[in-house]
Image (cartoon, rainbow, N blue to C red; front, side, top):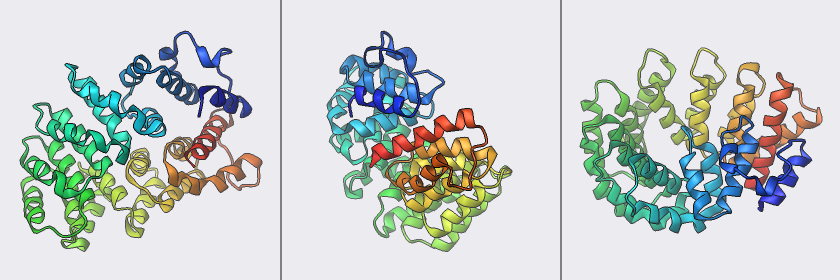
Length: 345
């Protein structure tokens, strides 16, 4: 979709950008706009400028990366060569991490960079090893092609690397692997804090090892917030499992203001794939404290966000029982969610 059409579409829903939408003099500044639609449109215009614009996008990736992820996903594999070339340059650790994250945002379309990502698993940088694991998980290659490089990370001296490797091994697992099970059990027993234990439990669950026990371990930690220090990884594990049972736990957390609601919504957006998970965010639209966040995370949910469109349309035309609690702010978020979900489809 061209930047010109995007400007037209945003104007149609009452969102005003600068008068010269397709040729703003300093688009990089707009990436930090408080209006997320302005920021997103600026991302697209910059990418259309080629390598220089892509450089600006990567430099402004931000702490959560959702807008950047969305744009990279829409552009698709045509940007892969540029991203892969950056990995061969002498760039800073932060720049390399962002580049790897952008490759991961392509999902399976980033497969052409897999060889480079496997090499980066041996980086001296903890952050690069973690980012490489996460990108490999998103690309989702056959476990046979990357297992020999991932398994050594289960003995890494950094629990964040161990956790990332466990999550990746679990997500790539297509059946029980005796070798993996033994290594993952070692992680369970070696991590008294439970940070990587949750990720290992997820991987063991995916390997079919004592699935009820592994699920209970994850569930109990997620619901024990804030007393369980590993509630974050537990939420990420539940979102990845994406089953009826895990979604029931996630729904309870998202709708309970004493729980980490925002982190749970972010986990669903990042790792869940089902229509049913998107509907958890629809349920959150009914409550004032979660409505704005739910609208935002629906806008970046991905293809399954389509499940939310009927309710979003009903809110827009006034036929829904759900009211907008902060109309000035949430009307913009509502239109953003509708526009972005429509574009996904």
